Structures are given as C-alpha cells and as structure tokens.
Length: 316
Image 1 (cartoon, rainbow, N blue to C red):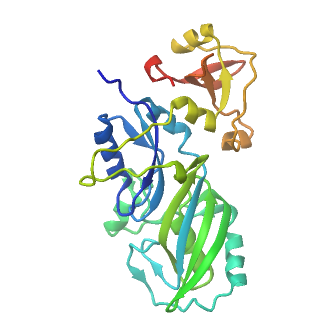
Image 2 (cartoon, one colour):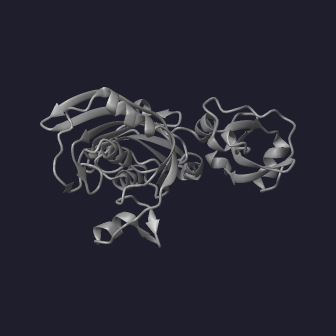
Image 3 (tube, rainbow, N blue to C red):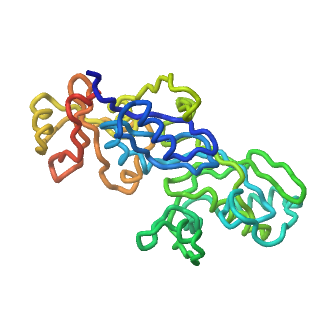
C-alpha cells in the first residue's frame, strides 16, 4: 500500500486558471484530499503558488506571512472598477504619456516603506462574513479600511506607450497582505491619470523562487507528470530557526509535553521573521539527531511548548 504523500509543492501557475483549480488538480494527481495553499493568485496572474500536501498543510501557517516578490505591468491613463484589466473602465482616458521619470519616481516614493493601503473592493476580505468581491458584484457600496503593509521595493524596470496610455513594468517586494492592484490604482491616482494592473507574476514567496516551481497540467493536458514534494524538514529549516532535540525530548514532544533545552537555537538562514523583527520570539523547528522534523515549538517561559507535532510517518 502506497503511503500518503507529505510535503510542500511549488507550482508555477498558468494564466487564466484559479488557484483552487490548481489545488483540485493536485489533489487528483496525488490521490489525496489533503492539499492546501499558502496564498492564492488571481486568475489573470501567473507565478508561484506554495501548496502543502498531507502533513505539509500544517506548515502553511508558517508560510502564509512570508514576504512576496512580484513582476507587474501597470497601465497609467485610466482606472477600472477592479483596479486591473478584468474590470470595467472608469471615467475618461487621460493622456499619461507625458509623465516624466521624475514625476513617477516622486509618486513611487510615497508608496514605499511602511504605508497604509486600502485594499481593492474586489478583494477576498470578509465583511460581516461575506467576501468583499461578492458584495461589490452584488452592487453594494464596499468601503474597506486601510491596513498596514510594507513595500520594500517598488522599482520601474521599463516603460512603453500605447496610444494615450503609459505602461510601466515594475518589480515589487512587499509584505504578505499587499494588493499590487491597489498599488497600480494609487500610483495612477497620485498622478491624476488613473491606473490599473494589466499583468502580474509572483516570482518569490520568502526564500522560495518560481524558478524552482513546476507546471501542473490542467485536465486534458495529460496526467503523466511527476510532482516532487519538498520535505517538511527542508521547508521548516528555510523559514524557521532550528533546535536539535535528543531521543527523550522527541518522545516528550510526541506526547504533546513541553521540554527544556540548553541547546543553541540555530537561526534561520534567511531574513528574520517579522515576529523576531518586532522583538517577539518566533517559533522554532525541532529536529532529531537524524535531522527529521519532530515539531514546531513556541517559547513558554523557560521551556518549549509543541505548537505542532509531526507524526512519525510524515517526518522527513
């Protein structure tokens, strides 16, 4: 009997497919219902989807908050109802081709760093239990509150004109929860010309790159495809600090008990999690002598409490 698959799958989503379509397809191809995601992409967008399979779904909690990198094309000269090319046009076309690099850079500067962003009205944010996009499509007047996000990089890499429109290619490094559509909208509004998103590709989620992702064929494109999973230990040690535990501690953690340890915590090889940046002690991945992932630990006074225990068959 084949054991159930466990791990993380990196997928390069094709355009015009929903993230839920990809999840459903992976469930079918791997023969398991236990598949989840660490953040969706709009159908028009392409790029990196991080999926958890089996016990890998339990690690998604520690991946959803990772920073993201996007490549985007922003069209200045007209706004839309959805802040992207899928929406209806708003107002008249404004000639944006005369905007100088200095003028654009001035507005980009105001959109970098720690900012308060009003999400798009067609976002998946819930208002009294109902998605904002569902309320907007039902004709309701949707008003969303601004929320804090961090834009570490917002850099224009190319520009072109198309009639009265100015198309800007850009690279964006941002915190989880950022709406790139809203950045396009706000850039256009800042210059008084309107703006919306015409293309979006997610190239990185934390330390994971779309270059390491694979294409998942849609139905009718073939079923003979390898879907290699990244092990839980590999993923956890790339986003969390690690702590080596002995056999006695492995047994205690497996029973849900706290442990005390004087072993040194090895820091994550990448940027510090935001909790650590804020002065909080982030969770830690507990590894046994063979390097297998045993549990995710949270500091509890002078001991460590298991926030997640990985069962033996899934440890890798």
